[in-house]
Image (cartoon, rainbow, N blue to C red):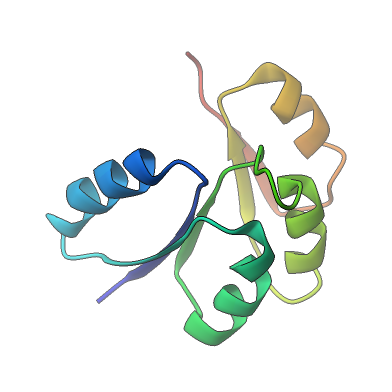
Length: 99
């Protein structure tokens, strides 16, 4: 079973995404805390991480900088301002989503 790590401070988003992806047999591991993200990514070894960039406890870009030391990843953002910031972080690829 594929595993997804979902990090968002909005519990309703976690619930919605979890309900949707669970239909497709994904195992969802979630947290509302950005501080737990790096530890969860290392311990859970997810196939995909969905990370809110605008978290209240830790900036999502800081988390990405920590993750890039230990994992390979692709970045995705629908927000133009966030996408501009993401391009500054070395990664395999930034995936753009149009609104």
